[in-house]
Image (cartoon, rainbow, N blue to C red; front, side, top):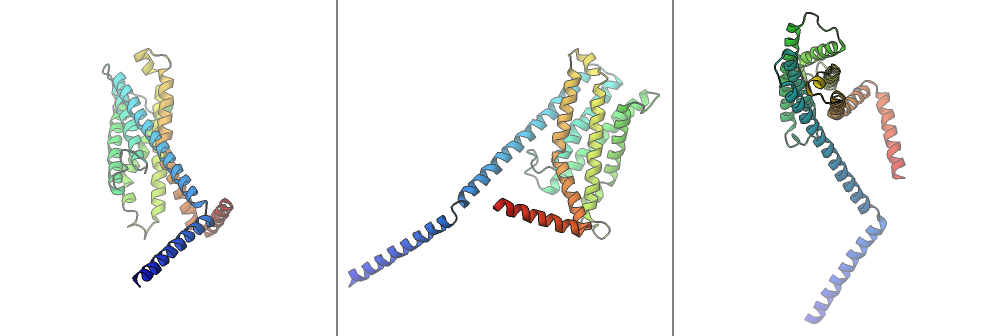
Length: 280
């Protein structure tokens, strides 16, 4: 009796295993491409993450390299121009670049911090950069009788005005959610982001036009050193702005969608069509 019961139990369990296995195989046959697609997506994400991290590391290395080199060369002897070079290089290339990178989600130096902590680091670096740039421009202003007549001077002064405005009116960005009764948070962040990008671009272009004075060449006697610094500074500017530009584009699209519902409906249709086409 027990043997029969045991045999029945064994037969039933075997049958259950066969049903489970057949069901699993049926699911595998029904969707054979899903595991492979998932593995491909994970591989693609991992490769993208490695690439973004490598680009971020290269940018940080270039920032340190250019800043250290210019400070080293300008520290060779004391002059008002050299102090101006040191302060403005630290203000723009080091502090302003890193302040922008702090808010980029892929920044390897601050990715482990919270969003609030990164915002605090961002404005602290901005304030320190503003102080360096103010002192750097101020000592040149006192040393010369003619002011802001060259392209270099005009770009630098324009950037300084914008960064000063950002430093004063940057606080509403931190409390944009609390101000939603008066103005949309996306508008506050969009304006702040746009002015920040404009300020940074103008300041870095002022740095580039400063190289054309060939002061570094006269100090080092290295051929094409000014051109090399020009290229490296432009590369730093572009790499540092990649996250800010994507944010500006998404903020602009969000604002347009909130103002024009027709645009939102059209983009939703386009997205749906694209996803359907991708699936087919």
